[in-house]
Image (cartoon, rainbow, N blue to C red; front, side):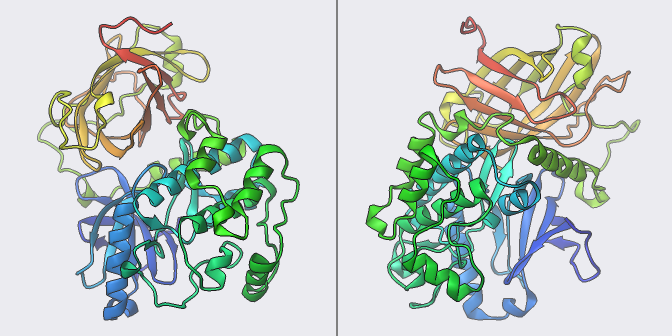
Length: 474
């Protein structure tokens, strides 16, 4: 990330810009926060020279429409957009992670277990894209983010609907990134879901070997290899080699589907493999450094609520420092999700019915210290809304309070992000953890939930949760 420069706007819509994240041909991407909210978002702002182009604005409108449709497992969903603004923009969920190309550049190829999780997650994302009648068309290492809870496929900037009437580019225009294109893309043939499977195979080879399957210099040379030469699979062996070779078949009909690829690598789903530790330690360390950098960012006064009358107090997250777990095993975590109906399971929100209700269970951290008893009531809510109010961790007179934002809702997983609450907390020993915190709640086959916090300071507390009143599973 980079500091904002003099030519950067302070606000885009209702979002306060905090830092530069990156830039591309059509615009710049910023880290931002919505007014009065703590969750980070990524805001893509179109360059001024393109904003006056009516054709470009129409293509951008279609891009945003397609990106909204593409939201699903292992993607960064679109949260907001304004196409009619003087400079159009779109806001997506911000993924606290490292791009695959940068991770491999800094630390070398990923181990086999990490590649398996990576490709299974991306394949599930592409299967969801296919089910929405879309094609991504630009699956490459730079468009893959590695987060502590799994991979994310991002940037649907050149995606298109399989319905040709919604195409984003002119007929005959080659779209994609040389070296990560399919043969049919290169020759201007029909583009469909098999196109994304081919480029998924190329990403697999890059992640496992450190270079793409068609190495070389110059766009023309790379595209020639894609069409006419066999892929270089390096030291790949076993199932990963078989999957890569199948995905990289020259004929689209000979390739497996994204769903078949996902099931081959992760029969129980990528989420079953994407727990803590799925990435090698050096990559994890880089991601944690990014998270600390985010926490250290100063929050402009105009992005947060005005302080209530009375004594000023610091807001705390509802987790205790990992060292506190050694003091007592009787710590109790209370998190009440109060948005929407109390577990009524209506269709007015994004939380799957299986998550609704009250859950509890014991947590431990990575040092096997007790993390307390977690009790959480999950109610209906929508992505982007505050779905938890006054969540609290209490232990021997110490209380930390917070609200939670729902950032991702999938069939088998919820991701929540902490934000400050209006409730008071008692923290005489200053043992509450400061800053942003993300928690993952995953539905298990036995009907229980698996809770995992990504807070390093709290020791990554995790544990299984059963419905309140039921006996914990053996």
